Length: 342
Image (cartoon, rainbow, N blue to C red; front, side, top):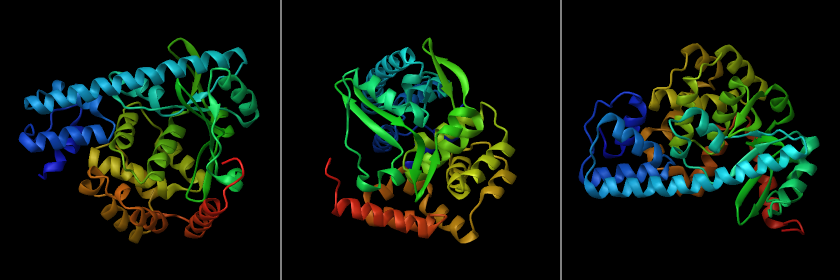
């Protein structure tokens, strides 16, 4: 087994002990640094204790420090999330928390074990203006859009930032690869829930299975936390017929396949073979994806380190290369001719 695979081995075996032995020496430091890089220091600190691994002192100290740092950051995000929910509730707005603390609360042994840096809230388009007013009342300021004159086509959220942190207010769940995942239908299908005593909506399980895979693929699966989320989501129970139908309904089933195929292949997520086959891209793209999303390359976040490789991978894996190319041209236009508010 390669030096870099201790992290994958731990995540793949969870909740059982991995077959391999505890990493030692430099390998242990690589293991801890990988956990930090992939947003899982807190969870890995928990899992190491559960499976009985005893890391060398320096590595154990680093892992503990990083897990506590991540937990402190997550507590700040949680505080902003609670304030946002309370303020929006006054106006009768019940948002859908996406990813982040709300997801960790439902999937992880402790929500502070998964790194999060901001608050993502999905609201119906008709509530966006009111929600912006409410959030600015918390001392947050709207950032200028990064999509310039093409914001109507390519933007999926507004960013509001202040001393308390960053809120990404979504009116679309996602925009990327030249396509969008609109938000209103997802909100309409969302299920009632609570978060720390505040009323919220959660994405329907099958919608969340599609959304999380799309989000991971949008970022070329460069964080193992996103893939581990998928593995843990399976444990909540999914109707895979609905997942497949929902993925095809987005027009982006291949992107859903990339996320779930790697979660199954690397991390042992229990995904039915017929569901993967129903979502799969042509064979040449499957082979390309398996090369780009190999264990070694994902653990080392290889694509993040090279902008040309990132763009090439995006274009080659895109289900609609024409749409992806038009998107890239719009991005170039924005870079060359930014809107006046930037």
